[in-house]
Image (cartoon, rainbow, N blue to C red; front, side, top):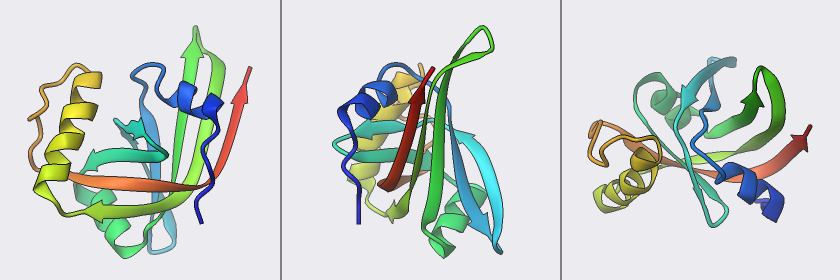
Length: 129
């Protein structure tokens, strides 16, 4: 069951283009990789391919961590534990590309091989420092 995302967390996740670290599981071992992400209406969107996507197809339980630093000092951190769903819909994927890629300065149609993954937050932890 999803946890409602607190307003404070929504503001942190949408404040600026930061790199997230997505943790998936392969053969009961963690696999962590940096990703671009988008957040809207209680859902996190990631566009990905390769090992991360294969892991999610096998085991939808994931963790996502986002942290804001200034001069090597943490300002805030958000960790989300949740379930990921692979969205096999070209129209929804293109719409997500139009939201996520420009946030990071990329053309919306960059990396057309990427597949849309939506993460439904289950547990959310956050800290500000």
